[in-house]
Length: 155
Length: 340
Image 1 (cartoon, rainbow over the protein chains, first blue to last red):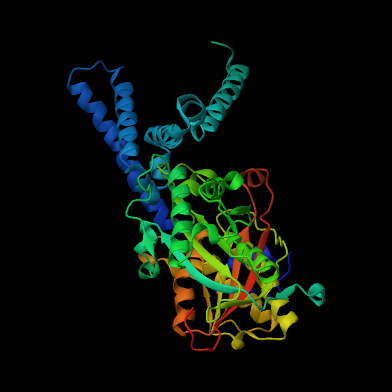
Image 2 (image 1 turned 180 degrees about the vertical axis):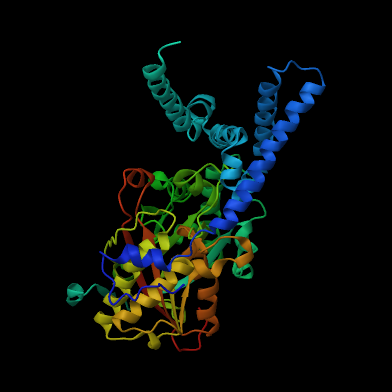
């Protein structure tokens, strides 16, 4: 690609800018389309599961949890047989953001580091990707709860 | 720049590139240069339990393979010199256990292959040693050390490259006329132009390659058109374009006879984006396609530059930019009609 700006000379100072203009950019619209489609389909499938569980006579409070658990289990299986990463190659956030992405983030390192044993490998590395999400999620939930109780009081 | 007045180029008279051997993975076999490899794997685990073991076995096979191809015995090899991408360069070191030769382990990331040729050339030129130089990498071991677990579903950056699976090995010998000869080497400097994106290694390494090329052309007074082929290790398609531009600004025309090993390795349909990278990249192309072309007489001389990005995951997470290095060797096919 030709950079838009004319760079008279390239120095350490303007090199990053030059590289940025010369690099092919991510296909944002295409990525967003696939993320929307795949993410939407996963969520729609989750809703379908909830409806099915309700039809099969599961209590209405239990059905969503059961649907989530099913999605997590399915994503773990698809990670294990090497399909989920192929989905992620084009779906991006569409396959990472739903709960299935969390399952993938747990199972992938677990598989990968199994070769270093159950403790130092699987046990230690399982939260490699999901760990920061959990930590920050808990932290943010505490902050939000604090703000809420400041304005609305405890309870 | 100001400091090209200090010469960094060394000349060799008696370094013969006697044999080249390549062992490549399944994806490389399906690539553009698939037919140029001596041995290819159907399965990138190579019958082993872990990818690390597979990579080690690849090194053992490549070292044995090149010795056999050269019609030599393992004890005729004085020194093995090589490196790989894993922490503490374990693959090549563990593989060297199988041999009785002395061993030097090197690390210049993806520039290791050319670095090993240069160190090997010293031993051959000044001490008359038979040296085995090798370098390689494995996609699956590198990926988990530098990036994410394999099964994690993530979008790859459009500027990313694909770590090549394979090992390239060469034997350097004194007094072996008729072979391609390593006639000169330029030792590179570490150059850092402030690139932070670990996916964009081509851009991080291009200034290092420019520095080494400019140094070589200044030292020798030659120009790019004096060579049948100029090859860089793994700048990839983007890095290649940047280098052509940078060289043009220095007054050297790289438009006609310049290739990048990484950009040549795969087809577009193999989704490697900017092409191949890794310590295997230049070793596979140089010992396969380039070496064969030299021997057949399709090209008479060649500049080969190994480019390496010298960051680690730790330095990247700590927010530091990517330093890079490039080493150059000049390889020439003697005009005499004599097989080596």
